Length: 408
Image 1 (tube, helix red, strand yellow):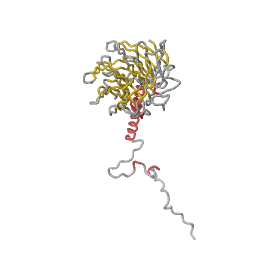
Image 2 (image 1 turned 90 degrees about the vertical axis):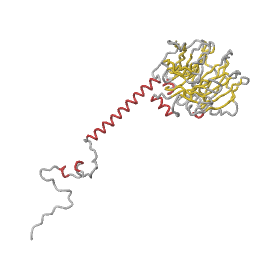
Image 3 (image 1 turned 180 degrees about the vertical axis):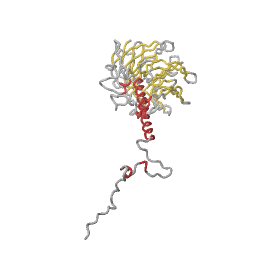
Image 4 (image 1 turned 30 degrees about the horizontal axis):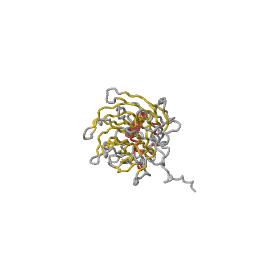
């Protein structure tokens, strides 16, 4: 009867064909961002071609660039303070021998006028190497008047916690009755205390008198006694805990200080050091010497009657100065130094940290004399921290290694 009817367009079709003269984009779904409906006050999302998106990207790149430049600058400064590229040729003395019985450090040495030498041994310091990490620290004694002096461990009275003994800097004081008092910076569980002992010569022992703790001594390093119960002490870091200590060193923060302690008052008397380390006092008691190990210098400060300190001068060097010893007869300063701090903190048995000893004469003059007395590349002693003299005998100590005795 009639022919077949043409089918109608399906209502489910995806869309009509574009009208003549219109591009497919005009009818695409979803529509371009520019066609999105917006409610009043709302902002449409940024597109890659927008100025806001471009400015944000540039700002982010600028921040990353500045951060990279800052890190690079701090890294250069850190390596400079560490003397990371410094190397010295050995310069040894002809009559030296390693001291038997000292294998795990001789970080600080104090010699009495009668030739008795107190030695702190066994220090475990955050970031530093140790050949005996499980061995407790000890105080050794040597009589330098003997033909072949050998160190002996001093017995410490009962009641003192020997298991956590971790001695660092030490100082002696001779009382009015000739009693000898020994001040010891201690780091039990890597905290900081000052232990006060009295030396008993009859049986070569130390009687523990008291433990001193104070919030102004969070990271004590070295100490110089002023009386039987007062002292100056250095803090070598502002922060405690190895990660923050390393960050402090990396950023080059000069936040460390010197503290005066007495039973009646405790206060800061000097500040602004990268890492205040060794400290000592002139034979006449008028001047205090402070080594800033990370700034490679010694600060000379004038001591006043109220124990405040006034900066007087700074003696610059090119080495990392650790502990300071003062010859009681000449006033000469002897210092143990680290040639390369990077080698010390990042210990490599194939690239050993060396040792350097300097003698400084007439430090208060306009032109002090600095003499390099001894240099070793680590093949004899590693990580020198102290050098001190008794007559013609020179003792050289280390943070974690052995000790050397030399005839001058």
